[in-house]
Image (cartoon, rainbow, N blue to C red; front, side):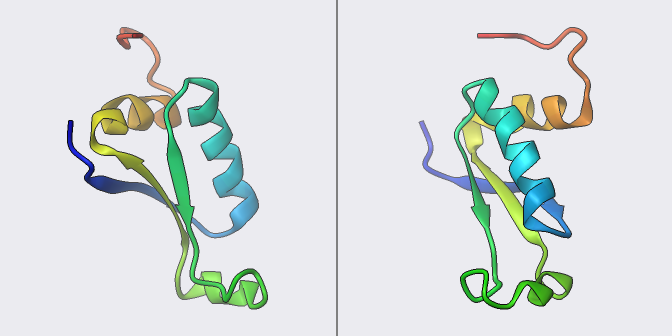
Length: 77
């Protein structure tokens, strides 16, 4: 099992990113939000550095399918 982490999507704001992260969490896919907004003090920096949603390598395919709404034919573990 690899420890590699991949950014699968970017978001213009933290709230939208948290909703996507909740979808992954509901399907037991660990994820992390990566922000460059000075710890929330400068949220306007999201314009230059969008919020990134990252998952481990083994969860990439399923996470992308979930966020794209492509649940038909998806293999559930």
